[in-house]
Length: 447
Image 1 (spheres, rainbow, N blue to C red):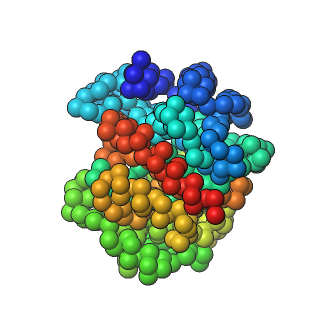
Image 2: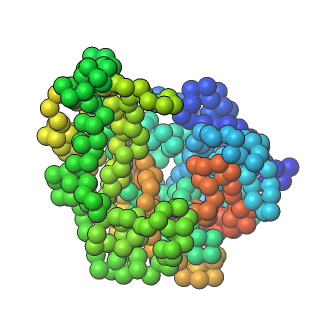
Image 3: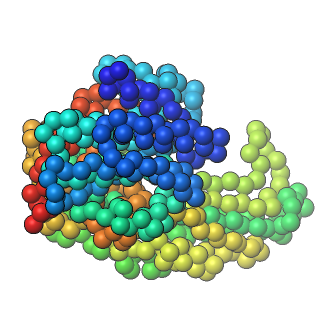
């Protein structure tokens, strides 16, 4: 069986971490990884239970004693596949079309995990590894890694390493390589507004009873101005501004704002004044309403004052914002801006993530630049993830080890959406590039 055939087999396992009915599939995916890692020559492969889905661990030893250790991190869980009717082929029925492998999880992140195993297998079958390689593959990244921090704290000695390489992530584009120096953090709350004890006839209560949907809209509107600046008191207090060097590096990234606008399908781009699009996407905090409900949702109208309304809000965070502090500020803001005649409850979502950034002068970034230039034939640009790798900061907090991103997927591959795919050329590039990176890192990490 070829590597690609094996990859298709891996992709066919519906390892959807968010849905309870797929819990057996999560276990099956973990056991599939264990068996494949053992066939690759990786030692001490173990599947660890957690409070949720399993963690898969293994180690491949260097050819020489005393070598530094690199931990490869990735995740085998996927997002749900909905909406199913928008997939050309089944999300867990992988198919190759035009050099692309279509399946849920193909790019995020089975297309990082499996090529990493293949790359190490090839090295073990050849001249050996210049560093010890540990593997840590989790099954809960797509739900915020709720159990991985505790697992890492309980297994610090087992996971001890000199550097973490994440195969979850991607490049700026198919043609332009990128060095990702950080990722934004994340926190979220649910706001529930209670008005009357039950829906009331709007003819009998309108004008006498406050409407929870309107009250909720007023609370939401109080959080941002018309230019997109967050008005929650204290929200920006701890934000670390970009240095001139960082702004200069971001400015070198080729951004076609018209193409971005067209891709997003919006009439114009929008955001906090005083910052470029890339700065707002990568290094400024955000506050977004991601869901809202209340009242009558059917066709036509129903003349009521609804009893309740609610919304979900998430914030992307940047250094040095702390999720718990932001939740506290949001809660206080809601309390101070609640209209009369309603009661409000604010509930924080679990799984908050701290923002992460690696120092610009860290020596491994120079190594990354050389390797990427050789792989892609051009100098890489410097970026950050606008999204959140929940566990990135945890490696630093728990193990005292920085993380670098080395993943070859491109941003057009419909990650989290219908018809997700991963290019075969990117699979091969990761298999080729990872051993080169490990060899270059060996020299830097020995110092």
